Length: 226
Figure (tube, rainbow, N blue to C red):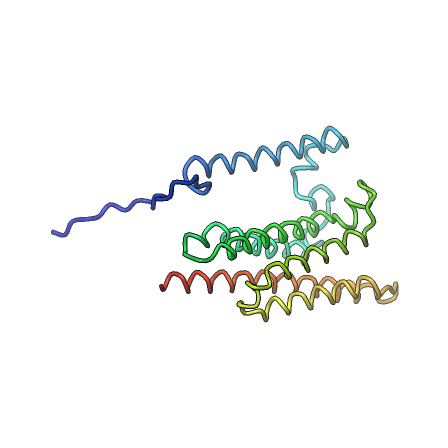
């Protein structure tokens, strides 16, 4: 009879610490929970916000129908997907034999995506920065554009070797959304303006996520076949 082989999880043969295995992974998750709980506590103490309002779904707190903000809510999933692709690329690029630049590209793309996703979810440039910190909304938006341009310039060597179609499409849609937000103001056609602005932004988010999915998948397939 053929002998059965025992299947076990691959062990890290490198000498450096691996934050994605064993107790390090548990500690990383615990750290995220501590940061989340600490943030809720600070908001509760400083601003007197009820704990239930900080933990429950926003629609439940506002007692709104579940379809309010539907497109924006779905967009958060795609922000999260893009950030996950970036983190996956950062965590696995060197193990696949890819260059360090790919890992750095994954990390910084994930951080940028998380920032933009948080802004979208928490209305940071519309509410948080102007009303709490006194930073003008336009200044925050310009800062995001500068960060994005710096990211594209710094990693241009990586980006030009990817299939850039989805990235270009994403930037076009984001730009169109911002132009509509800045220049189209009409109470008569407000619903149409919201439809165009938020629809373009949603398309940009989906294309942004798609770009990182396609790039990460291509890198994995290319290095797994060698």
